[in-house]
Image (cartoon, rainbow, N blue to C red; front, side, top):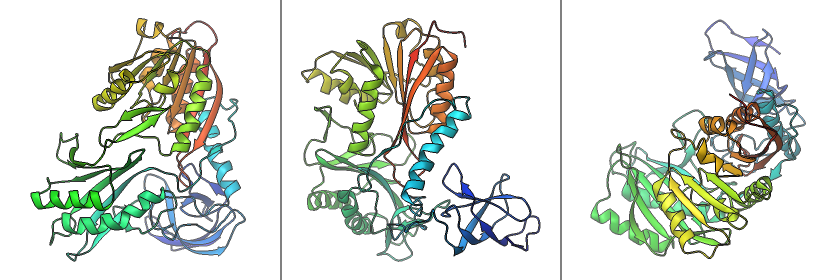
Length: 446
């Protein structure tokens, strides 16, 4: 490989042969001067010509300008926006290589915390075109009648205006063009850069849409929103300002109750409620969680959301569900109170990051399930390590934080029995992971 104009701090062009894949899916190459370089959208075995910017934070990243020779690991992307839209990073990989790399990311994350001997099951694959939630970004262009809507280009705040998406459910894709037309009227005319975010959930009642902008809608705009909801057969359309403290969306129109079935129980969702990315992914996760709790008779479901796991668990045990979001917790409580369940469900509102269940609170349970945000549940894992709970099941969308929390639990006396990754985020570096633990002896002092 050659390096041209590679003076310190200067941009340069170089040939590089891609040797492998990094943790984010970027190709990795070693340049002629010995430096390691990262190349987005490059596949193992590729010989590429790339332009490199000055390294930031010690990491040298290049932009592939030409693939001189394709590696055996390269495949044809399925989406015309791939390579410009930052939503997908790995459509250019051959499918077997892609699946092996995703599973390997979990193995490596565990190994970094001394858990490399733990067996990781084969990847559970969720098909494309199944994602039921999305968060689009839209911005008015220089003309009064142009709005770009889509996802950010990789590493920028430039919006890639999309017309199709290979990841989303067809119903969400079909909404993109009408949303673009609607936003021409909603974003302030004559103000280039006027911006909105649009959160869409595909629920069992239909699409639930929240539009997020800096200002409240005018009366005329509200009327336009009502017409739009009817024309697109939305279940609900809400509006939320980006102003500090404006966290609860205002419902503009609800054409029918927004409900989602969790293990057969209908839950009335608040606007913008969290759902697992796909129905098939949710079903796979529920099955793994049920396997992990075994024959437990009293279970704590922590970071419970609106009941993704709670209602499935209540089919076999009493459940105490804990959730930080009051609207989500109230939705769960209301559904539980009106359902004919085999076992009771108790619900409490609590910020488990700041105040994890601990001590005598955990002593009431023989199994605990926790499914925290990407940052993981360090404090809750430490409290569990000091407890006598017999079984723990951890679900996570972040291999690094899951591995860290698993290390804490193992140091507290648990055995990590099983790790399964569910790929419900096709062609991205992200995964859902479920890890099952059993206590081997008495709790240890951490």
